[in-house]
Image 1 (cartoon, rainbow, N blue to C red):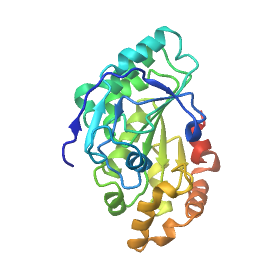
Image 2 (image 1 turned 90 degrees about the vertical axis):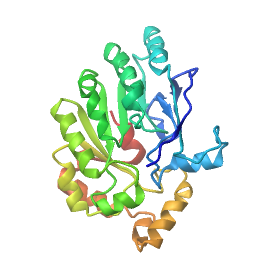
Image 3 (image 1 turned 120 degrees about the vertical axis):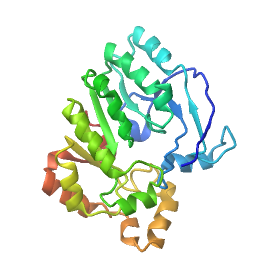
Image 4 (image 1 turned 60 degrees about the horizontal axis):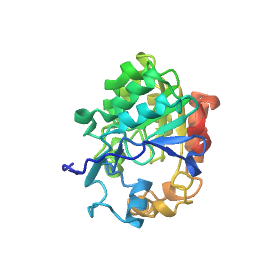
Length: 273
């Protein structure tokens, strides 16, 4: 993965009202704009193509840290606006992009939420680096860490998430978080070609629950934003995984193996407290 251009800036606001897919939350929190993981199925990539690119660079080739993220969140906390907030962090980027190791913007926001916990916090990532903040996450009683585990097959993972950390490292991160007393979730979102039985074996000991989504519900546009990845699946001879309803069999296996109450689906699953 090449180094992305960095465009640091001060943001006007850090808690943004949500709607649509995230209607179960009151706000999203994005310490960064842009993302370096460059997953082929990312719906934000499709949106970035449709909208004007503020930096004139391809998706994944730029990252814009919001340098005052923690200060803005602390201001909201002082005003009492976190008490009833249901926060999703982050919906359009990963809160643990590589630059977080240096800038610690996500950690700064978590420090605020330790002092003033929101009503609900989902921290969505695919980076094992989230374990650095296990000490803080364990002190936010409403926190749930959701780690993307889209497949059990590392060959598939490399094909569709080439710049993201290996699945085994993410499983290890979930195990470490759970051992630290942090609530954990696997986001099988979107479900990629996999062996559902083996995926169940991997997830069972490391998460409280699993949320499964597919290319048709999860992209918020009935599959229209997933055209590129659906075409790639078909080109790779995986066309059965590119049809509406393809996730049903895998969901049935996961529910049989893990228990129906632990396996949620799509928007309702992500919104569950």
